[in-house]
Length: 487
Ligand SMILES: [Ca+2]
Ligand SMILES: [Ca+2]
Image 1 (cartoon, rainbow, N blue to C red):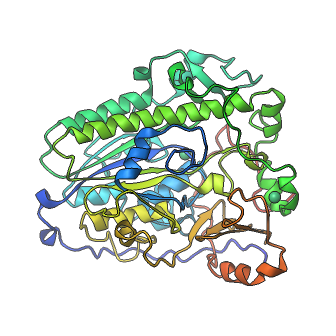
Image 2 (tube, protein in one colour):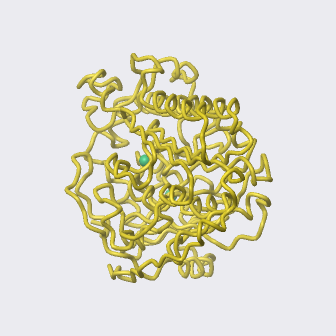
């Protein structure tokens, strides 16, 4: 079916929230600790995505709460993934597909109530730090936060490292990785964590929504030397790769693997310089650094007066390839780009220590949190996800919602408990059976034995997609690329 960029209906939102006067008393409402991680794929201990990774603090959180083993982003890149999560709307409805967009320019989202804004308007004190939205300016208009600390990001690290980088790649301008000669306490994420810990040590007069946005392991994959000690390059495992894995991809699937082909981040470039092990070790070290920040936060919460009355949600905005399907970074519709850590813990989450296999999305966080905190819905039809609360008490509860990921209009992946079905804008298809093929090596889309399931999964795709909401000038690190035709 040829792709048609038809405009999806953009129904206005109508305020239909309950009056604050009938909400539970403020002192009975739980606080929220909302931990956002940037670009962390399923390489955590509790998800088992990599055999060598060490994330003891996130694993401990998973053991105290419910972890979702089949959670996926709605867009495999920062801005649209976060716009979707924070407004509870799908990319194919809101038209936010790329980095170079402002979510509030989208017609559908002009009147939308963001997640922190909703907590704020319902009597919560909203405190944010680090990367919550994609763009720093999105934090500063006063709508979302009573207090916000942006943090210093990572550009300063590039200046310390210098133009030659530390990876050994001849051109490290787009992608660089390796140890950097700084103390952990100098890292931006460490400082952001310090700021959040100070808030946890303060007396809060209202329930709080504390959002902490950690940018590691977003590239460049820099972290202090001490975090590399657990990952000697000659002993770590490389990702599972199948020779000829791309041979059964349709033309659009193969094209998706070529996004970085003309850049230093191509698989060919990294392997020909003998840097694959070092790149994997660097990502693992970054995951462990971030895990240490998470551990500091969890420790501070446990020592605070809020230990027993705070819901914790931890999530990452999308995954990351490190050579799987010869692909690096995100921007794909395969498992390694879409699968993310997602954990809930705290009051109301009763199935402690369980892992839920039901397919869920980051879009479900907004309705779940307002359910757990007994807040009204923001308006009648804004939220397009589903509250996960039934699964937080019974991870095996009935659940008939496949999860959708979209990368540019018309390119979609549907994930059910067993299947991943991909359909590109030109009609090309892929199908993977996760019961027998967790690495997505064997594309079954042309298998006659699977005609029926493909027909069924096609019906779960959205019938149309919003066009791009207004776009900003292209950033220097994004490539010219046609996401709609195979050549
Ligand atoms: Ca990201
Ligand atoms: Ca294959």
